[in-house]
Amino acid sequence: MKPYAKIGSLLLALIIAVAAVGCTPISLNAEWAYKTDKVELPIGVYSYSLKTAYSQAKNYASKLASYDEASDSWLDLEITDDDGDKAVAREWIKNEADKMCLNYIAVDNLVEELGIDMSGATADSAKKSAEEYWTVGPYASYGYYMPYKDEYEPYGVSFESFEYCTTLYNTKYSAIFDKIYGEGGSKEVKDDEFISYFTENYTDYKYIKANLYKSTTDESNKSTDVALSDEDAKKITDEFDGYAKELNNGTSFDDVVNKYKTANSITDDPVTKAVENLKSSSLGGELKTALGEMKANEAKTVKVGTGNTAVYYLIYKGDINSDIDSYVYDSTQRNKLLADMKKDEFAKYVDDLAQKTDCEKNQSVLDQYKPELYFVKPESSSASSSSSSSSSSK
Image 1 (cartoon, rainbow, N blue to C red):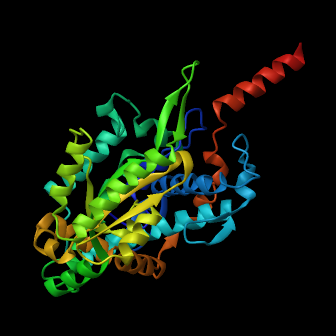
Image 2: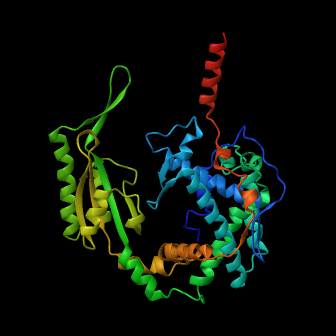
Image 3: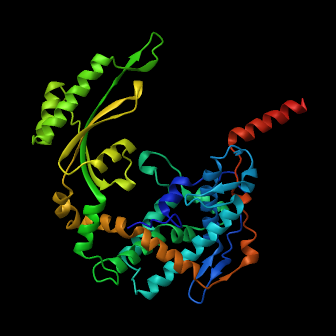
């Protein structure tokens, strides 16, 4: 189970990280930032957290009309985060970094309290993953060499701090989650709870679709989508409407699909199918609404879009009860289901513990790390400024 909260999430750090080329280096001395009688966080942990929060805040600020990527002036703008909370960017960044550090301590405390063993293969796996990200980056297998060492080290983040905030934190977070909600845990989730949650929140669906437009290429080789004529569009909608009737009269979905493939000389599988929680699904709103109104083993046609964007769907809703064995009693799917059930509750539990954490802060050192430190002027802006200066000096 990966941490669901945005705080400390490795996935978030990997996605929103901003290149730090050309920044002003910070001392790598292992000064402490936060400490309790059992845990001491080096300043590199705080710097990592501040940089991660900076990237999040920059993303929020970039949606504002007054945002200027060539300047750090956006740090004084009011931003709105994913929870709908508003704050001046620089204050939001500092508060978020503080929350992250307190979460690290809370998780360490829970590991000790619950007697979780973080040695051996578990720790080795976390270190190996961190070393890969640190030395070659997450995309090395795709031919992209982007080591996080180059990005974080200039800001005083050592490998140990990077590992602590990312792979090791995620590993501990997952272990605590499993200890609490897994078999024998203090909040163990029983089979009947799994079944109830699964059948009430998940949907089994399948669909095929056809475009009600076609692509044409003009003399300049430019491609344009053009809506089908009413006659051609009707052929498709009538065909799909007919399939829906057949399905609702008892014909199997596979038989209908085979008929569709034969009639249209289709060789590839045209079916999209899933069993998922629609609340977190990327499925379009029109299809979600249709599925919400449908009964098990019912078919319906849905038109999405208009004109040269219109698509016609034949969607079939299966009986979710038929999926219980393959989801509730399959260990891999069961773990995913458990994460979906309890991720929000667990994230709140850790956040609440973090806010109650009593620790000492090395404020004079923390104050040296300001959000402006992580601003890097885009190369295009820098080049433009240099060009303007050269022109003025001539």
